[in-house]
Structure formats: structure tokens, C-alpha cells
Amino acid sequence: MRLLYNVLLILLSPLVYLVANMNPKLRQGMTERLGRWPRPERIRRPIGTNIWLHSVSVGEVKLLQPLISALRERLPDATFFTTTITPSGRKVLDRFAQGQEDITASYFPLADLPWVIARFLNAVKPLVYIATEAEAWPNLQAQLKRREVKSLLVNARVYSSRKPAWKLKLTRMLLQDFSRIVCQSQEFADAYARIGVPREKLIVCGNIKSDIAPEMWPETQAERFKSQLGWTRKRVVTAGSTHPGEEDAILDAFQQLRAADPGWALALTPRHPERGEEVMALAEKLNLTARLLSSKGESETPDVVVVDKIGELLDYYRIADIVILGGTFNPRIGGHNVLEPAHLAKPVIIGPHIDSIAEHVMRLRKAGGVIEVAPDELSQALSSLAMDEERRLKLGARARTVARSLAGATACTVRAIIQELAGA
Image (tube, one colour):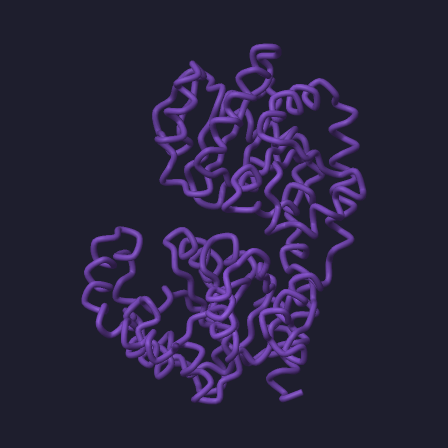
């Protein structure tokens, strides 16, 4: 299967280059994607110091920050080569790496092309390669193994149910060269075992996102932030990381809430900020006053602000009175990070699609720290919660208690990495 994969890659490589150069997201940073960096001396560190960490996009890139901080303590001489695929992920990496000489940010090798992978490995010479969640590339894994470089998949998750046999076989091939797989939960570890990953390669550490506890703002800081939007006397619903098909239900529910109580405002944050204009148009169709966060022009106090900038979502969680979690009303997504608003003691409404966050939702559900609704129940749930401040405070407090109880995954993951490096 791997031979066929490479034959197809070689035959299709001219098309890969053409498509990549036509795609604005892939064209950005193309020289880096081909292993030609503007400052190659930043890549070529002393042999045996570079730890290569890879995350596909923003959500996974955030995992690298606590991981690198913990690795620094155990491996003080290490340097860190970090990669991502998307421009939004790269912006987050750049902010994290700014001013830190031991961290280099780069785009990931283009399309797993074997000659590009070789160029990366010849330059980086990694001590170890660490991928996050579900990222596996056949040629990279094979070349790492040939060079006797350890590789780990951390914060790992996989879904094996209802998948055809050929997909399971492909998944097993993608995973077979990892030295160790550090899983988010026992459920995921069992799923890897069913696919065919040997049990001795599997370890359960929990979800690193559980350790990322954002700082809460004092009320005065939250009010200053709201005043910039003209929302000084408003209560705020923040809909985080939404996808196509979800904004319609959220906006409809908000319109009904605002008709009953105009003292509410909505911060609508699409998962992909480039959809900002599209999402704003949906709000305007419902006769809601909306503006893009990126818009420089001043307008009347908006009912809806479409947050079309990277790295802003946490601040809008901080000012929220209610959070609606995106990705949970879309069956193809299965949810996003529910612990961020939970750590901030926010009451969270989620939809029925929670595959990606099932364990966290289970714990929140057990503690009475989350509201679960079908799309057609969202409006009623939002209005009911909006009218009951005491319930909002209780839900938020329970959610925060659960989020705090889940800490420890980062330390466990770092121990697994150190053990693998030591050959344990």
C-alpha cells in the first residue's frame, strides 16, 4: 500500500504543485513548505537538540505551548522546531515563538512528498518527532523510522466505529511507525487497539487542553473591553468556533432572545475567520445590526460582532454571560474545546455532536455543568438561561470545578516522551 501511495504521489506531484500554488492558503509560505527557509541557520541547530513538534491548525497548535514549557524544564538544552499546515495555525505559532530563541516556527512539508520530507529531515535532524491528536504522514513516519528517530503521537484520538475496513487498514498503516501513542482517554486507547496498534505502544495521559487554564478577568477589565464595542450595559452571548450551518440556528435563537430582551449582544466567532463576511450577511438577513471585528469604520452599537480575527476568542469568552459551543451542532465536526469556557466559569450550551469532546462532556454532564440541546431546542434553552442569572452562575461554577479536576495530562505526556527518549 505504501509503494502504491508513493507511486501515485510521484505521478501526481506536478498537479500537487499546481494546486498548492493556486490555493491561497497553501501558496502562503510555499518556500518553507518545500524546505527552503529564509533563515536556515535557525533550523540547523546542533545535532541532538531539535525536538520537532507538529500540529495541524489553531486548536492543536495551542497544545504545543504547555508541552514546550514542560519539556524545557526536563530538557534545558533542547531547541524546538514547530510546524503547522494552516496560515491561522502559523500566526499562533509565530506569536508563541516571538522573542524565544529556542523556538523556530515553520510550515509543514508539502503533501508528504518524499524528497521534501528528506530535505526537512536533513536540515532539522530531530532528536524526536512529536505529532498531535490525529496527524500521521506515511513518508515522514517511514523516513523517521529509517533514520532511527523516535516519533510519538500525543493527545491522540481516533474513531474506529462505523468505518469501512479499508479505512481502518489505512489508519493502521499510518500509525504503525509511531514509537508510542499517548491517548486522551482509555476509550481512545481501546479504539487504537481495535485497529491493530499493539497495546504496549499505548499510554493514557488525558487531554493536554485540560491543563490550559486561561486567566479570568476582573469585572472592571471585562467592562472596559465591552465598552470598546458599545456594550457597556449589555450582557453577552459568545458563540465560539462555529461552522457553516450552525450560525443560522444561533442567529435565529439570538434574534428571538433579543426580541424579548434587547439588553443582550452576540459575539459570533466562526472557526475560519475568512468566513466573516458570509456570517455577517446571515445576521443582516435577520435585520440584526452587525459588524466585523476587523472593520475599522465605526457604526452604531452592533447587536452582533463577527469576530473575524485569529486569537480573539478567549477574550470574548471572558466577557460572555453565556457560551454556545460551535462544532457541536455539526455532525462532521463533533465539537471544539469545551474546557476553555469551563475554566472561565461560563455556562455552556452544546449541541448533540460531541465525538471530539465526549469524555469532557460526560464529566460536565455528571456534574450538572453543561446544557445539551438539539438545534431546534437552542432558542428555548438560550432564552431560559438568559432569564436565570442564578442558574448561569451555578452552571459556570460546576463547569470550572470539572475543568480544574482534569489537570495533569501535560506532565504525564512529558514523562512518556522522556521515557521514549531514554529507551524505556
